Image (cartoon, rainbow, N blue to C red; front, top):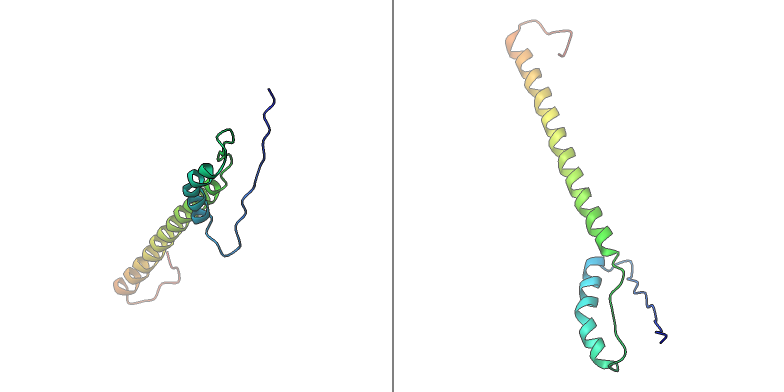
Length: 96
């Protein structure tokens, strides 16, 4: 017995959210399945939203880590600069 299949890609517009499109499509699949004959099955095969969500998570992690390290370096720099200006009457030629 030969089974036929049809692949229907769903593409979003540029201003649409990938996550929203995927969630809306998944919620509509049972409704679409009810409109078809019993011998026709709908399945969700390939989800690119996983890659988008992972990229956003990575971006947030790296951005937070970058902000934290930058803040620590600025704090360290300002603390040393303040210590030098309060501790000596003569300005130092060297910052560190």
